[in-house]
Length: 63
Image (cartoon, rainbow, N blue to C red; front, top):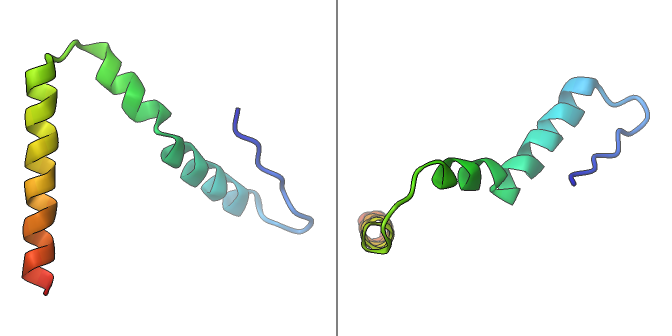
């Protein structure tokens, strides 16, 4: 369960923004979407490798 303490004088918008950030970091929504449809292990592995290659190429372009 995510708990956000609202400080005195803090706007509700800022507190909601902090809640959304914490919720995003937990990965609940991402896991829920991934569980909606079964994905074979080989496909999962392939997507992980594709992401790694993409990140590596980004790092090479920056340097």
